[in-house]
Length: 446
Image (cartoon, rainbow, N blue to C red):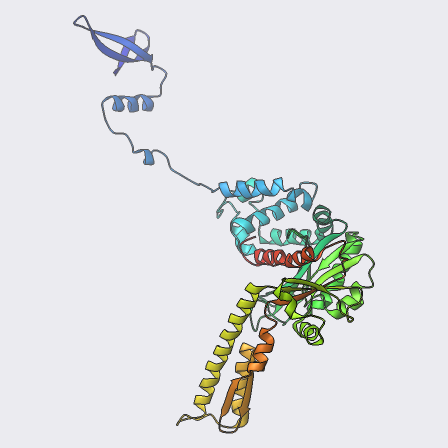
């Protein structure tokens, strides 16, 4: 094939793509296409190809100016919309709603600070198509904070909508607390308190989550960092009864939340409000010592329902978990051995030749730190003098605690005809779903 230029009198020449071939020994020509209207650069490129020349490599034929990843944005945003979360935030589309939706999606695909998230949407620094897709690419950090203020004002109707979706009359309402440490000086709720994150020396906030039995969150409440767990129960009851209008509900909480005082003062007076919680270890020991709970019965079953005069009109359900018993036994032995190693170090310090540790007060201070660290001091007998320390395990104390390994007792006001013992145990264990929700809230696994 070749390109032929054919004169055309007073008109521009015709540019034809032709092909030569042989027929009966004669060379003949046929026209394949009329290229008269092609631009000169395009004609020249075709001539070079027909001559066998190498054109620009494919990778150099065009320049990539910008390529924004979009697949994960489409997947998360599409799932959010199928769940109807955007409509729960606000029925009408608005810039504030779009910003909040964008922050939720960003929290899933690339968790960062608010400032970094804002920069990740702007045209000059965009890392995904998220800002462009939702039309919020120009939003700065201030706009993000304003959107969060808008979301805070939307919390009551949003929680009510979630409660209608996830909670119903007679349902289980799982409630648990956690804390998270706080960086910075400006949070009015940040206080020093018991840190569940193990962040000593950091102020924190406390927040509680209400979920249904499947672990779907319906409400959240935030408290000052030094708030005691039991004092957070009253606001949750108010929310369930007054805002969500649930006349009958079963509140499930652990033994640190639903204490005897909370049950007596805040749960029992409320008609239609039942609860499921667990007894503390000293109380379980009292039941065993008084004979109300016979450990010998666990030889035939791992679940015993009982009553006790101290809990009128309530059910107690004792459970024995062999796996949990083995784990607690291993943990206790590990803590005992660790304590012994530290105490041995202290005893060695009282006998060394140089810089010997002396004085009953000094030795006791070192010993106290060890006992506080491992929390098994009750299982040791100690003798501290001015010149040394003697210790040994209290086998009787260890055996008494080991007898209750794997044993826990639930306390509930729910009648047996409404919730049998096995289902009551399963309901209490559902608190694990709230813990999973906490891990999602506090990590990147939203």
